[in-house]
Length: 363
Image (cartoon, rainbow, N blue to C red; front, side, top):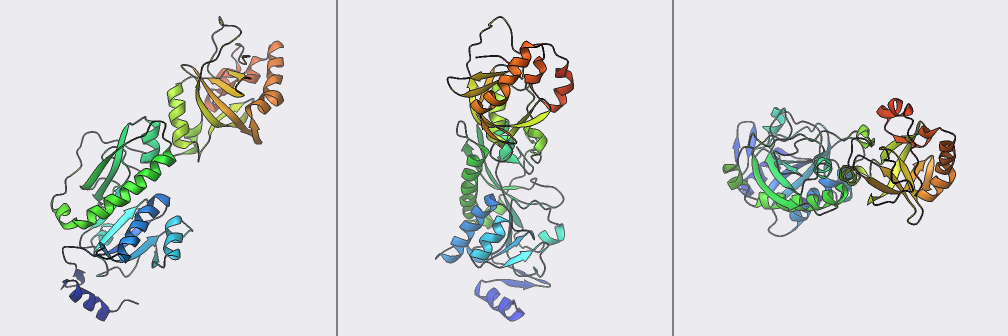
């Protein structure tokens, strides 16, 4: 347990001074840190801070963690590496820490808590602020086709997320065809290194901090399952590709077929297909099974995109889905029931059920 005697001893060793009611740290490292975090992105920063704590000449003197009560990656890492863990909200903070660090925490910190840290609380944010403020910057970076992103270290302010002054920032070129998981891993590592770099000269960076510009601010709202629904008549091939890379591993793309939800798996990108009837223009949502590549091709706004598998109660290859379900729809087409074969979004279902166009197209 922390005692006044130990606090005073630590203050003398570090050149600290005591003001009424709290301890004010010296201007340089090593720092006493309280880390707020939850997910795997946050673990990378915590890992680097923990390593710096144990190395000679490191920037961290002591490290403790605040996390949410449930079992989250940051809590597991802290327990495995014997880092003290506090539940949210933390108590007994006065005079014990120089700086706070927030990474993927998801809770607003009150001004009275922020003021307990002489050098404030820093935040590692995976975007080039003020672009993509909010809880899902990586998802929206991929979904909107950004070619450049980065990481930003800011001082947090109360009441609003991601609006504080910038202390450090670094660009990152988004690799072509990168997924959100791949980009998140890269930015987590880059953010962790940038955080350590920031702590090396923290006082100078605070003295030269810059406010975020007013122009160019965008918001990255929380990812919602409704974002995974395909709207074939509105989405282009490129948009489908970006949405798949942004959400595919955690939130599979979805469509409906004969009133049933289908998850679209193993996206293979844009398809160039030949149809038997070149004069008939396919409508968005039309399906064509490509036997030579065992691919299920679906028509969207400006072309065709392909999938190798679907989930309909169980996982089915494109071939299995065609043989077990889609082939029957082709037979219904001959009996003038074309809507039975159309992939539609839920909102478009009522409108498309009245469409008399043939929707299953043989390859």
